[in-house]
Length: 236
Image (cartoon, rainbow, N blue to C red; front, side, top):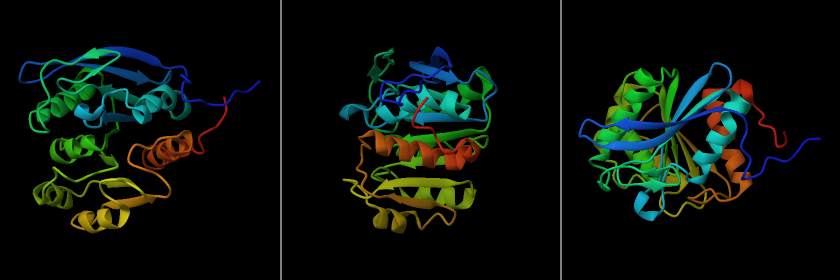
């Protein structure tokens, strides 16, 4: 008998606790969830602002890790940036206001490729994590960026111009009622990147609360990295 997929649903995957070492000497706590068969693609997750509760377990990322390996053959790597704590533990260091986190992003990307041998890697940021992605996820092995609720508060035209020249995909999912950047304003700001796509998400807010919005977010992510896995089931 089938059951509804609920917020607490955890589907089968290989789950491994990891420690990422940064160039400036910190240890970052994380986890990688991989499918039971070869992964089609990888999501490297950069979480929301830790001073406002953001962490590797922020709900969309945790649900992605709990579901997408089984439902879509996606590997999901999550970690706590410096000074951030979750159930898995606390990463070394202190919050760097988006500056020293450069070392965290670069170390996580390198770990994904050299230690875990993950392939077809996309970086997905949420809120503060989108600013880290735009600033520091520039490794040429990265396929592109997926941005949830980008505030663009710390992002300068220098970063936007980099991605314009770079040419890799940049896709922003912007809630209709986002408290920081709404879809029309996002389209205006991202117009500096010719290949950028801004998708307005009707009815959603910055935190994507509620299973219907989680389903929409995961669906839009899969449209980018593995559309063959769609539609996502509502039951298992």
